[in-house]
Amino acid sequence: MMDTAVEVSYGVVDMLMGPDSLVPWWAWLAPLAMVFLKLLSPVLVPEVAESRWGSEKSGKSGKGSKKSKKAAKVKKKK
Image 1: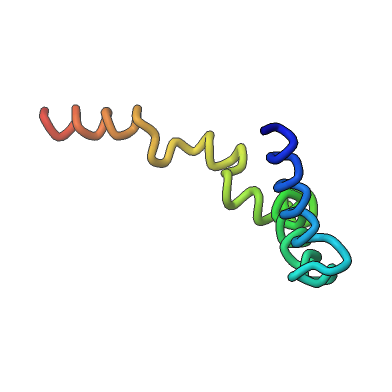
Image 2: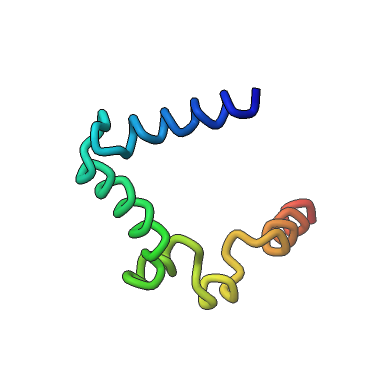
């Protein structure tokens, strides 16, 4: 039973990446490049990473924080 599972998995991998594969070798380059560029984007383009995850400046400003919203609600009630 285990031998059958191993043979089937080798057959699938051979169909995908072997010399007689359904997908040519160069077609695997684009998805791999997309994944690695996505992982490396904070290093390659730090401005994008700051705007996406926020910088220290935006954390200190207090915009949208829970404390400022609660303070505004208290002022409205008075």
